View 1: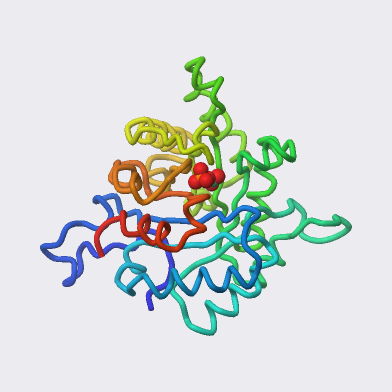
View 2: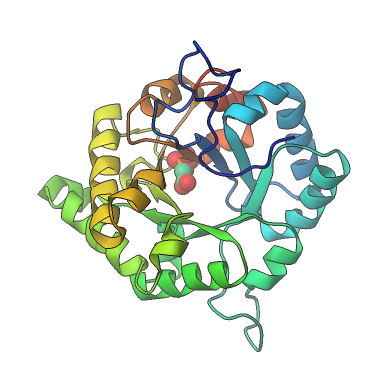
Length: 283
Ligand code: PGA
């Protein structure tokens, strides 16, 4: 099984000749990550991961990188299942402490997640920013802690409804992005995943239009180019999140700067999640 690395492409290979490019010609492999939030116990986690892995064909899992992000309490069970059955699925944590270890009751560190085989961790999700008052500086510290543990951050940015209504959403999101990337080097940024998640679209059933998602993801890439240069920016995957479902994922994922999705509610239902994965480039 091929590694779950970024940017894999069939272009230039014998197999890839005369085929539709699997990555819209960008070199960026589509990523679909299921953010389960505070749902599903470890037994339910096993059942869902088994269903997803059973439904998706090896070729589909090669084309699209599929990742689940369960609650911490499920991770050991998911690890055992993925390792034992050699599933081509990645998994990660929903948050991590900026600290590596120590007296931080209730927190989970990067090294603890790394030991469980997590390849990703979400940082700066709007629910953490709202519920736990996390600001950009804290998000940047968490992203750094993730890299220190060898884990790739999925860094979330997005505007609330009032900011979109005021028309200042682009500058708001680009400001959030720059602040949340403070101290992250170009070498580190080359592997990061950014998720643009308009807060008004999360869990509401209101999805941004594909064009709105594209416009913001392109603006995010422009900001990444200013921070890290064109080449690094061109390799970074920018996801859209906010009420992604099987019915709208196809339109979103064909947009040139939308490299996949961070999926909440629809990731809890195997058929929906598999449908979203199948909305990516054809296997
Ligand atoms: P949703 O959540 O798909 O339920 O809108 C997305 C997210 O918060 O990552």
